[in-house]
Image (cartoon, rainbow, N blue to C red):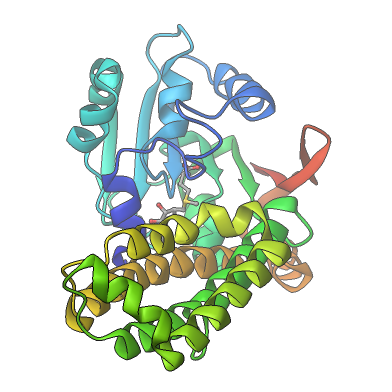
Length: 320
Ligand SMILES: C[S@@+](CC[C@H](N)C(=O)[O-])C[C@H]1O[C@@H](n2cnc3c(N)ncnc32)[C@H](O)[C@@H]1O
Protein backbone atom coordinates (compact mmCIF):
# COMPACT_ATOMS: atom_id res chain seq x y z
CA UNK A 1 0.00 0.00 0.00
CA UNK A 2 1.32 3.40 -0.82
CA UNK A 3 2.20 5.10 2.42
CA UNK A 4 -0.29 7.97 2.24
CA UNK A 5 -2.71 5.93 4.38
CA UNK A 6 0.05 4.60 6.62
CA UNK A 7 1.21 8.06 7.56
CA UNK A 8 -2.36 9.02 8.38
CA UNK A 9 -2.98 5.95 10.56
CA UNK A 10 0.40 6.29 12.28
CA UNK A 11 -0.83 9.66 13.60
CA UNK A 12 -3.30 7.69 15.74
CA UNK A 13 -6.61 8.93 14.27
CA UNK A 14 -9.32 6.37 14.94
CA UNK A 15 -11.49 7.11 11.89
CA UNK A 16 -10.77 8.34 8.39
CA UNK A 17 -12.55 11.63 9.27
CA UNK A 18 -10.28 12.92 12.00
CA UNK A 19 -11.66 16.45 11.66
CA UNK A 20 -15.22 15.27 12.36
CA UNK A 21 -14.78 12.48 14.88
CA UNK A 22 -12.10 12.93 17.50
CA UNK A 23 -12.98 9.67 19.27
CA UNK A 24 -14.92 7.23 17.11
CA UNK A 25 -17.78 7.36 14.63
CA UNK A 26 -20.79 8.99 16.28
CA UNK A 27 -24.49 9.69 15.78
CA UNK A 28 -26.14 7.91 12.83
CA UNK A 29 -22.95 5.96 12.08
CA UNK A 30 -22.47 4.56 15.57
CA UNK A 31 -26.19 3.86 16.01
CA UNK A 32 -26.19 1.93 12.73
CA UNK A 33 -23.11 -0.14 13.51
CA UNK A 34 -23.98 -0.84 17.13
CA UNK A 35 -27.31 -2.20 15.96
CA UNK A 36 -25.58 -4.47 13.43
CA UNK A 37 -23.01 -5.72 15.94
CA UNK A 38 -25.63 -6.36 18.60
CA UNK A 39 -27.41 -8.74 16.21
CA UNK A 40 -24.40 -11.08 16.25
CA UNK A 41 -25.07 -14.00 18.53
CA UNK A 42 -22.64 -15.42 21.06
CA UNK A 43 -19.95 -17.77 19.78
CA UNK A 44 -19.78 -16.07 16.38
CA UNK A 45 -17.05 -14.08 14.70
CA UNK A 46 -17.02 -10.72 12.94
CA UNK A 47 -14.56 -9.61 10.26
CA UNK A 48 -14.00 -5.93 9.49
CA UNK A 49 -12.60 -5.25 6.01
CA UNK A 50 -10.20 -2.36 5.32
CA UNK A 51 -10.40 -1.55 9.00
CA UNK A 52 -7.94 1.36 9.26
CA UNK A 53 -7.25 2.09 12.92
CA UNK A 54 -9.94 -0.38 14.05
CA UNK A 55 -12.81 2.07 14.56
CA UNK A 56 -15.56 -0.49 13.84
CA UNK A 57 -14.25 -3.37 15.96
CA UNK A 58 -13.78 -0.88 18.80
CA UNK A 59 -17.42 0.18 18.40
CA UNK A 60 -18.50 -3.47 18.33
CA UNK A 61 -16.57 -4.26 21.48
CA UNK A 62 -18.12 -1.28 23.27
CA UNK A 63 -21.36 -3.28 23.34
CA UNK A 64 -21.38 -5.32 26.55
CA UNK A 65 -21.57 -8.77 24.99
CA UNK A 66 -19.26 -11.70 25.62
CA UNK A 67 -18.02 -14.40 23.35
CA UNK A 68 -17.93 -12.57 20.03
CA UNK A 69 -14.56 -12.52 18.37
CA UNK A 70 -13.52 -9.55 16.22
CA UNK A 71 -11.04 -9.88 13.35
CA UNK A 72 -9.83 -6.97 11.25
CA UNK A 73 -7.85 -6.65 8.02
CA UNK A 74 -6.15 -3.73 6.29
CA UNK A 75 -3.63 -3.40 3.51
CA UNK A 76 -1.73 -0.64 5.31
CA UNK A 77 0.59 -1.09 8.23
CA UNK A 78 -1.56 -0.57 11.31
CA UNK A 79 -0.05 -0.32 14.78
CA UNK A 80 -2.07 -0.82 17.95
CA UNK A 81 0.79 0.85 19.84
CA UNK A 82 0.44 4.00 17.73
CA UNK A 83 -3.29 4.07 18.42
CA UNK A 84 -2.59 3.68 22.15
CA UNK A 85 -0.07 6.53 22.10
CA UNK A 86 -3.02 8.84 21.39
CA UNK A 87 -5.80 6.84 23.01
CA UNK A 88 -4.35 4.85 25.91
CA UNK A 89 -7.86 4.12 27.26
CA UNK A 90 -8.36 1.75 24.28
CA UNK A 91 -5.49 -0.60 25.16
CA UNK A 92 -7.64 -3.31 26.71
CA UNK A 93 -10.23 -3.27 23.91
CA UNK A 94 -7.56 -3.28 21.18
CA UNK A 95 -5.97 -6.37 22.74
CA UNK A 96 -9.19 -8.26 22.11
CA UNK A 97 -9.09 -7.60 18.33
CA UNK A 98 -7.27 -10.02 16.04
CA UNK A 99 -5.59 -7.63 13.59
CA UNK A 100 -4.13 -8.68 10.23
CA UNK A 101 -2.49 -5.64 8.69
CA UNK A 102 -0.61 -5.41 5.40
CA UNK A 103 -3.13 -7.90 4.02
CA UNK A 104 -5.20 -7.42 0.90
CA UNK A 105 -8.93 -8.07 1.34
CA UNK A 106 -8.96 -9.46 -2.22
CA UNK A 107 -7.24 -12.60 -0.92
CA UNK A 108 -8.09 -13.72 2.59
CA UNK A 109 -7.02 -17.35 2.39
CA UNK A 110 -5.63 -17.18 5.94
CA UNK A 111 -9.25 -17.59 7.07
CA UNK A 112 -11.15 -20.85 6.64
CA UNK A 113 -14.49 -21.10 4.81
CA UNK A 114 -17.66 -19.93 6.58
CA UNK A 115 -15.77 -18.53 9.57
CA UNK A 116 -17.81 -15.33 10.00
CA UNK A 117 -21.44 -14.53 10.63
CA UNK A 118 -20.91 -10.81 9.95
CA UNK A 119 -18.45 -9.11 7.61
CA UNK A 120 -18.44 -5.34 7.99
CA UNK A 121 -16.90 -2.56 5.98
CA UNK A 122 -16.93 1.16 6.63
CA UNK A 123 -15.69 3.18 3.65
CA UNK A 124 -13.45 0.20 2.98
CA UNK A 125 -14.19 -2.64 0.56
CA UNK A 126 -14.79 -0.25 -2.36
CA UNK A 127 -11.06 0.58 -2.37
CA UNK A 128 -10.44 -2.94 -3.64
CA UNK A 129 -11.62 -4.97 -6.63
CA UNK A 130 -15.29 -5.61 -5.92
CA UNK A 131 -15.46 -9.00 -7.68
CA UNK A 132 -12.51 -10.41 -5.76
CA UNK A 133 -13.85 -9.07 -2.47
CA UNK A 134 -17.30 -10.55 -3.10
CA UNK A 135 -15.75 -13.93 -3.87
CA UNK A 136 -14.00 -13.85 -0.49
CA UNK A 137 -17.06 -12.51 1.33
CA UNK A 138 -19.13 -15.35 -0.07
CA UNK A 139 -16.54 -17.96 0.89
CA UNK A 140 -16.05 -16.59 4.41
CA UNK A 141 -19.66 -16.02 5.43
CA UNK A 142 -21.53 -18.80 7.17
CA UNK A 143 -24.97 -19.64 5.76
CA UNK A 144 -27.40 -16.84 6.65
CA UNK A 145 -24.44 -14.59 7.50
CA UNK A 146 -24.42 -10.91 6.48
CA UNK A 147 -22.11 -8.57 4.66
CA UNK A 148 -22.87 -5.01 5.74
CA UNK A 149 -21.12 -1.98 4.29
CA UNK A 150 -21.33 1.76 4.27
CA UNK A 151 -19.48 2.71 1.11
CA UNK A 152 -18.40 5.87 -0.63
CA UNK A 153 -20.64 6.52 -3.59
CA UNK A 154 -21.09 9.12 -6.28
CA UNK A 155 -23.39 12.01 -5.35
CA UNK A 156 -22.52 11.83 -1.67
CA UNK A 157 -21.57 15.08 0.03
CA UNK A 158 -18.31 13.40 1.06
CA UNK A 159 -17.37 12.76 -2.55
CA UNK A 160 -18.43 16.22 -3.57
CA UNK A 161 -16.32 17.86 -0.87
CA UNK A 162 -13.46 15.47 -1.61
CA UNK A 163 -13.42 16.45 -5.28
CA UNK A 164 -13.52 20.15 -4.45
CA UNK A 165 -10.59 19.71 -2.06
CA UNK A 166 -8.72 17.90 -4.80
CA UNK A 167 -9.25 20.78 -7.21
CA UNK A 168 -8.07 23.20 -4.52
CA UNK A 169 -4.91 21.16 -3.89
CA UNK A 170 -4.26 20.94 -7.61
CA UNK A 171 -4.43 24.74 -7.89
CA UNK A 172 -1.93 25.08 -5.06
CA UNK A 173 0.45 22.46 -6.48
CA UNK A 174 0.09 23.09 -10.23
CA UNK A 175 2.74 24.59 -12.47
CA UNK A 176 2.15 28.35 -12.19
CA UNK A 177 0.02 27.56 -9.12
CA UNK A 178 0.36 29.18 -5.70
CA UNK A 179 3.51 27.39 -4.50
CA UNK A 180 5.15 27.83 -7.88
CA UNK A 181 4.60 31.59 -7.65
CA UNK A 182 5.98 31.57 -4.11
CA UNK A 183 9.09 29.72 -5.30
CA UNK A 184 9.65 32.16 -8.17
CA UNK A 185 9.24 35.04 -5.76
CA UNK A 186 11.70 33.48 -3.34
CA UNK A 187 14.24 33.20 -6.16
CA UNK A 188 13.81 36.90 -7.00
CA UNK A 189 14.33 37.78 -3.33
CA UNK A 190 17.80 36.22 -2.85
CA UNK A 191 19.35 36.26 0.67
CA UNK A 192 17.72 38.28 3.42
CA UNK A 193 20.10 38.99 6.27
CA UNK A 194 18.46 41.88 8.09
CA UNK A 195 15.36 43.97 8.53
CA UNK A 196 16.91 46.44 6.05
CA UNK A 197 17.04 43.73 3.34
CA UNK A 198 13.36 43.12 3.97
CA UNK A 199 12.52 46.80 3.58
CA UNK A 200 14.66 47.02 0.43
CA UNK A 201 12.63 44.24 -1.12
CA UNK A 202 9.96 46.81 -1.83
CA UNK A 203 12.32 48.12 -4.54
CA UNK A 204 12.75 44.69 -6.11
CA UNK A 205 10.30 44.98 -9.00
CA UNK A 206 10.32 41.31 -9.97
CA UNK A 207 9.67 40.14 -6.39
CA UNK A 208 6.97 42.76 -5.88
CA UNK A 209 5.21 41.74 -9.09
CA UNK A 210 5.25 38.13 -7.98
CA UNK A 211 4.05 39.13 -4.52
CA UNK A 212 1.01 40.81 -6.01
CA UNK A 213 0.39 37.74 -8.21
CA UNK A 214 0.63 35.58 -5.07
CA UNK A 215 -1.92 37.76 -3.27
CA UNK A 216 -4.30 37.46 -6.20
CA UNK A 217 -3.94 33.69 -6.20
CA UNK A 218 -4.50 33.58 -2.44
CA UNK A 219 -7.71 35.55 -2.60
CA UNK A 220 -8.85 33.53 -5.66
CA UNK A 221 -8.40 30.29 -3.73
CA UNK A 222 -10.04 31.76 -0.65
CA UNK A 223 -13.08 32.85 -2.68
CA UNK A 224 -13.42 29.60 -4.59
CA UNK A 225 -12.75 27.03 -1.88
CA UNK A 226 -13.28 28.89 1.41
CA UNK A 227 -12.77 26.57 4.40
CA UNK A 228 -11.43 23.78 2.17
CA UNK A 229 -8.50 26.06 1.31
CA UNK A 230 -7.92 26.85 5.00
CA UNK A 231 -8.00 23.15 5.84
CA UNK A 232 -4.92 22.65 3.65
CA UNK A 233 -3.10 24.93 6.16
CA UNK A 234 -1.55 26.73 3.19
CA UNK A 235 -2.58 30.26 4.28
CA UNK A 236 -0.82 29.60 7.61
CA UNK A 237 2.23 28.28 5.78
CA UNK A 238 2.41 31.45 3.65
CA UNK A 239 2.00 33.61 6.74
CA UNK A 240 4.84 31.77 8.52
CA UNK A 241 6.96 31.94 5.38
CA UNK A 242 6.80 35.75 5.32
CA UNK A 243 7.25 36.18 9.04
CA UNK A 244 10.43 34.04 9.08
CA UNK A 245 12.33 35.57 6.15
CA UNK A 246 15.23 37.18 8.02
CA UNK A 247 18.29 34.90 7.94
CA UNK A 248 17.11 32.89 4.92
CA UNK A 249 18.41 32.35 1.42
CA UNK A 250 16.60 30.88 -1.57
CA UNK A 251 17.74 27.34 -0.75
CA UNK A 252 16.30 27.41 2.77
CA UNK A 253 13.04 28.79 1.46
CA UNK A 254 12.78 26.21 -1.34
CA UNK A 255 13.27 23.49 1.28
CA UNK A 256 10.26 24.83 3.18
CA UNK A 257 8.20 25.03 0.00
CA UNK A 258 9.12 21.50 -1.07
CA UNK A 259 8.25 20.13 2.36
CA UNK A 260 4.83 21.73 2.07
CA UNK A 261 4.49 20.35 -1.48
CA UNK A 262 5.20 16.81 -0.25
CA UNK A 263 2.66 17.11 2.56
CA UNK A 264 -0.07 18.40 0.22
CA UNK A 265 0.79 15.79 -2.39
CA UNK A 266 0.26 12.98 0.14
CA UNK A 267 -3.04 14.49 1.12
CA UNK A 268 -4.09 14.69 -2.52
CA UNK A 269 -3.24 11.00 -3.04
CA UNK A 270 -5.64 10.06 -0.24
CA UNK A 271 -8.35 12.19 -1.83
CA UNK A 272 -7.65 10.69 -5.24
CA UNK A 273 -7.96 7.22 -3.72
CA UNK A 274 -11.39 8.12 -2.39
CA UNK A 275 -12.46 9.59 -5.73
CA UNK A 276 -11.61 6.33 -7.49
CA UNK A 277 -13.10 4.16 -4.73
CA UNK A 278 -16.57 5.74 -4.81
CA UNK A 279 -19.15 3.36 -6.20
CA UNK A 280 -20.68 4.65 -9.40
CA UNK A 281 -23.52 3.12 -11.39
CA UNK A 282 -21.12 0.92 -13.37
CA UNK A 283 -19.56 -0.62 -10.25
CA UNK A 284 -23.00 -1.03 -8.69
CA UNK A 285 -24.04 -2.99 -11.79
CA UNK A 286 -20.94 -5.19 -11.52
CA UNK A 287 -21.69 -5.94 -7.87
CA UNK A 288 -25.35 -6.73 -8.49
CA UNK A 289 -24.49 -9.00 -11.42
CA UNK A 290 -22.03 -10.90 -9.28
CA UNK A 291 -24.42 -11.77 -6.45
CA UNK A 292 -26.22 -14.79 -7.83
CA UNK A 293 -23.08 -16.71 -8.77
CA UNK A 294 -21.71 -15.99 -5.30
CA UNK A 295 -24.79 -17.21 -3.39
CA UNK A 296 -25.37 -13.75 -2.06
CA UNK A 297 -28.76 -12.11 -1.81
CA UNK A 298 -29.34 -8.38 -1.84
CA UNK A 299 -31.12 -7.23 1.31
CA UNK A 300 -30.54 -3.47 1.10
CA UNK A 301 -28.95 -0.92 -1.20
CA UNK A 302 -29.90 2.53 0.03
CA UNK A 303 -28.55 5.99 0.57
CA UNK A 304 -27.02 6.39 4.00
CA UNK A 305 -28.06 9.71 5.54
CA UNK A 306 -26.23 11.71 8.15
CA UNK A 307 -27.87 14.94 9.31
CA UNK A 308 -30.17 14.47 6.32
CA UNK A 309 -27.27 14.37 3.85
CA UNK A 310 -26.22 11.58 1.51
CA UNK A 311 -22.92 10.28 2.92
CA UNK A 312 -22.72 7.10 0.90
CA UNK A 313 -24.46 3.82 0.18
CA UNK A 314 -25.54 1.29 2.72
CA UNK A 315 -25.30 -2.21 1.31
CA UNK A 316 -26.46 -5.37 3.01
CA UNK A 317 -26.07 -8.86 1.55
CA UNK A 318 -27.01 -12.26 2.91
CA UNK A 319 -25.28 -15.55 2.23
CA UNK A 320 -27.87 -18.07 1.03
C1 LIG B 1 -11.25 5.32 4.17
S1 LIG B 1 -10.17 4.20 4.99
C2 LIG B 1 -11.39 3.46 6.04
C3 LIG B 1 -10.82 2.83 7.26
C4 LIG B 1 -11.85 2.41 8.33
N1 LIG B 1 -12.79 1.42 7.84
C5 LIG B 1 -12.57 3.59 8.91
O1 LIG B 1 -13.77 3.77 8.60
O2 LIG B 1 -11.96 4.34 9.67
C6 LIG B 1 -9.83 3.01 3.76
C7 LIG B 1 -8.87 1.93 4.18
O3 LIG B 1 -8.84 0.94 3.14
C8 LIG B 1 -7.58 0.33 3.16
N2 LIG B 1 -7.44 -0.41 1.90
C9 LIG B 1 -7.41 0.08 0.65
N3 LIG B 1 -7.31 -0.93 -0.25
C10 LIG B 1 -7.29 -2.08 0.46
C11 LIG B 1 -7.20 -3.48 0.12
N4 LIG B 1 -7.12 -3.85 -1.15
N5 LIG B 1 -7.18 -4.39 1.12
C12 LIG B 1 -7.27 -4.00 2.42
N6 LIG B 1 -7.37 -2.71 2.80
C13 LIG B 1 -7.39 -1.75 1.84
C14 LIG B 1 -6.63 1.51 3.34
O4 LIG B 1 -5.38 1.07 3.83
C15 LIG B 1 -7.41 2.35 4.34
O5 LIG B 1 -6.99 2.05 5.65
